[in-house]
Length: 132
Image (tube, rainbow, N blue to C red; front, side, top):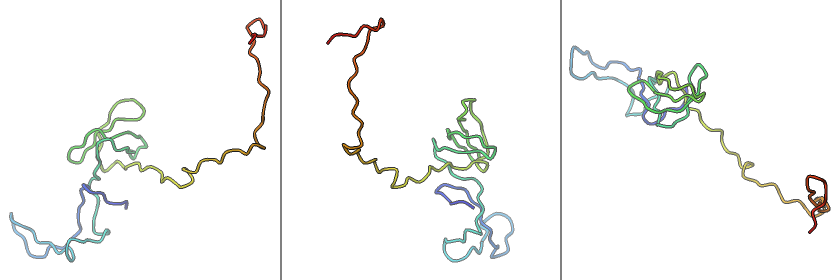
């Protein structure tokens, strides 16, 4: 299972602690405090922010334009329009991590490595050299 993000809707596997009839509160035994093992939590619908890049389980990609309940409205990258899909069918496209190498510029060439070419004079269409 992937990482959980703030705003995700999840379900929890738990035991009912006391018998429950109708209405009121259902008491659950879910472990100590608010910390629950990840194996006990099932994703219902991931949370997406407007503009998040996503990929549908079909392979289609796009950007989140709106969400409501368990649905997401996605503007498709292939310029065919929009699609409304269950948020559970979408995954966030995360950018590749930037490596330190990406920020290292190439060292400048040494004077011995630079090829010096003589200046050329542009010619007119009739191949007559243009005087300086």
